[in-house]
Structures are given as C-alpha cells and as structure tokens.
Image (cartoon, rainbow, N blue to C red; front, side):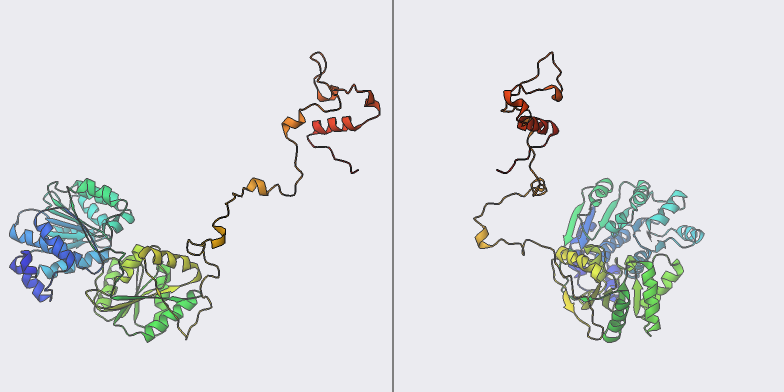
Amino acid sequence: MFKQLGLNEPLLKSLDKLHLNTPTPVQEVMIPALLAGKDVQASAMTGSGKSAAFLLPLLHKMIENPAPVTATRCLILSPTRELALQLDRHCRDLASFTSISSLTILGGESFKEQKAKIRKNPEVIIGTPGRILEHVQKNSLELGDLEFLVLDEADRTLDMGLRDAVMEIVGHCKTDRQTILLSATLKHLGLGKISSEIQKNPERIAIGSHRTAHAYINQEIILADDPSHKRQLCSWLLANESFKKSVIFTNTRLSAEELASFLMKQGHRASCLHGEMQQDERKRVMSLFRDGKVGILVATDLAARGLDIPTIDLVINYAMPRSGDEYVHRIGRTGRAGATGLAVSLIAPQEWNLMESIERYLNLDFKRRKVEAFPAKFSGPSKKKKTAKNTKSKAGDKDKPKIKQRHRDRKNIGKRRQPSIAKLKEPSAAGTKEPSAAGNKTPSAVTNKSPSAGTDKKPAVAEKARHDGFAPLKRKK
C-alpha cells in the first residue's frame, strides 16, 4: 500500500481517486530512495509506473517543505513534446488535492505567452531542452532555487543530440539539488559520463530489463512483398482484429502521411502524427486519439517513448524499427498495467536480417503468421547465413589435419615454375668462368672457353636463359 511508503494525505487521496492502490515494484524501491534525498538512476520496463515513482516523492517533499517565495523548485526535461504534455497531465492528477502548480514549456508555442505564464511562478516546470534553454538564456526562467532536476528518457535525449543543451541548463541550476535520471537502459554509452557530471553518488535501480520478454504482449510477424502489399495487410488487420485503439509505426514522416491517407480512403478512422506538424495540430491529434474520436494513430517513433494511453490493444510495425530498443518501446504502448495486447510486424525481404537481429537481441522467436486473403510471394531468404549450428564438422573429419589454404598458392596453379634468383647466379656445368675485374662485367661479356664451344650451343642457350630470367626448355629425347 502507498500509505506504508510514508506519503502524505493529499497524495493518498489523489491515488484513491485514480484507483491506484498498490505500488509497482519500481515504485516500492524508488519512492523511499527519493524521500531519503538520494540521487537516483532508474531503469524499468515500459508501463511499470516510473512517472509516478519520481513524481510522488518530489510532490511529497514540496508539500512537507513549502517555499512560496522561491522560483521554480522542480524541472523535468523530456525529449519529446508529447511526453512532456503527458507528464504534466500526470503531475496535475497527482497534485489535484494540493496547491502545487505545473507548467509545460515546449517549442512551437508563443514565447511571450510562455514568459507570462512563468511569471506566475509555478513550482514544477516540464519541457523540452531546446525551449527551456531559450528561456534560460533570455533570463525569463530562473533556476537558482531549483531543488529537483529530472531527466526523463535520458537515453533518448542523448540520442537526439541534446546533451549540450542539457549541460548548459544544468550549469544554471542550483548545485545543492536532487537529480534523477530515468532511462530505458543504464548501459547507454553516454549515460555514465553525464551522470558523473550532474549527480552525486547516485543509487542505481534496475527493475527487470527492457529486453525481458513481455508476458502480456503477443508478438507476431507477417511477411510482405512491397509497400503496396503492406498497405493491404494493414487495412486487413484493422478490419479483422478486435481492438479499441491501434498505433501503427513507420520510419519516415512521408510514409506515415501516405499510409494514414490510404487508410482513411479505406474507411478507417485514422490520423497522422510526426515531428514536422505544427504544435497545435499535434495537440489536436493526440486529444482526438486519447478521447477515442480517432481509433487509429499512424506515427513515427515520436509516439514510441513514454506515451501512456489506455485501451491500446494493437500495435503494428509497418516498417521494422532500426534497433531492438526502439522495438521494445514501440510495442510497449500496448500491454500496459496488466492488460493484454497484440504487436504485429510486417517484414519485407530487405527487413529480414533486421528482424532476425532483433530476435537475437531480445532472445525470442516471433510467431509466424499468414494472411490467406493477401498471401506473400516472399517466404524468407533462399540461402541463410552459416552459423555455428549449421557448420559442425562430420565425425570422420575430426582426425584429419587442417591444411591452411593460401591465396598465393592457389593463384599459381597451372603456371610454369620460375627458377629462384640463387639458381640463376650459379655457374653452368659447361665450364663458364666469372669475368675478371679488368674485363667487362656485363652478362654479354662472359664467354665460354670450352673446346666444344664452337659446336655445342647448349651452354650458350642456358647462359641466355639465365640472363633472361626464364628456365631453358628441355628437348624430348
């Protein structure tokens, strides 16, 4: 129970209102650590309740120690606008029985309006690093009184090239603060370096692994021939699978727009979401999808991180993600909070190797599925790569010595063997002598003083052969 974790009464009322009674494993570990004032690095599976795990103790400490005359007390940095808006919504729900206020600062919105809202001095500010840094540089946001700094989805923030912006923001923050890093994996290349610069003796918390098989998600693949075939398979799945909400992921903005347009022409209630859309349009699309007015969202990886939308039953990978981590985040939009979900990936011929690499990375086997209405001509690669399993030596070959084959030996097969330089310099058996020091040292000055020199031509031929660099031809007897 949350009450046993020592949270105050206003937060317990909010949890009862949200029907959250039992803390998740990551919440049971993170909340006491943060209440004790420790810096924390945390990693857990998608849908494990990481947001509440850091919001609840931070809100508790702000309630217990009010500071009405200070500037912003808590700053939460998010890599995407959609995740920032979701965190703000979650923070407002948990603080509904308190006087704590929060504000989102995002790109694509009016800078002047944001500046006016910051003057109202909200305790919690949630935003993207680019726009937060812009306000800090123009002195419209004061971070000298900051008590808590949170980097949500820190690995994604680093992958997007936002490290410099984050470090410049940290330079304006209060040094005596509590810092929390949340990441899909604590083994990210740049995470250790940034942690050493902004945290003090952090406690590492890893609940499960992002690579652990998700028990509540059925993962399937369907082979496809080309983009046209994939569009037909998408439309068929949406028409024949029972779901309340579905998210379809693509790798590019153009393919997201084309697929959404195709599905709408097929009669599906679909909408599109990608990073090039205006912020007002992105908000409108997410609002329609969250309220159930649009049941299908075609999106890029913008929607793969952190979004917690109830009743998503079906996730379709129209294009296979480029890494196993992104695959985990995509399918993690379904199967949340104990609900079951279905994740289907459409695999074209050029995506087969990528699919197999993700299988090996996650240590699982995708279930193969066929759609009889739209069969695929592609049935897998004709020749598979040799692995340790299919290259075992036969029992009779174990005792045979292994002979190393060199390219230099194979390339001379069938060619006439040339004599070595040492043999060319040896005097012939016909009685030739080395030239004297006073004589001409050129090869043509060497003469044969044998009595048979005038009649026997063989020594001269051999002499010429030696100087030309080729062995003499032997006559058949």
